[in-house]
Length: 179
Image 1: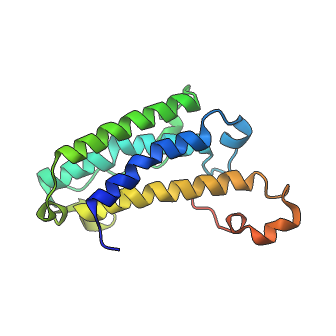
Image 2: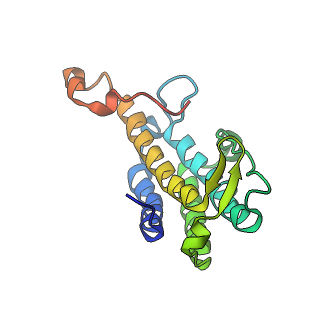
Image 3: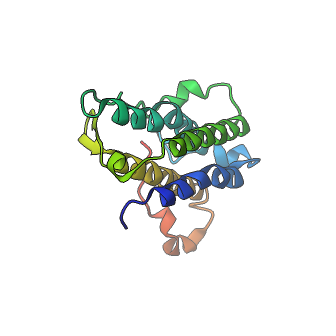
């Protein structure tokens, strides 16, 4: 499927209510447990998404539009939420994410991007040259990745409780991507 900005905006606008519906008011047994080791739990995922709203997506959109490939994006700290979310409740994080996402999507819409803008290039510190449309498509797929991750983390909590049905539950066979 080729990139489509309206389709991307439609998907990005649905992530906050999807997270809210899935996570708000769940017991910590669902939201504070992970898949082992240093993997993310649901609380971490929401904090990570907030950090992306603050430091990744729109700052990189602006960097591409203003500087093109002349200056690389700032590296993204994938574990910044460990410090930034400290002391906040999950409902606070869900509200913060919804507010930031709405603000960022309003800002993105206000740019009235044209096909020539979407073809503009920026410089990723690891990947090299990337287009604005690739960045925006990645934003959408990043959301989907974390929605997938949440279902996997939460299913992991019942991996033994399901007994022999685990043979039919693909989410329990998916390898983790959160470390």
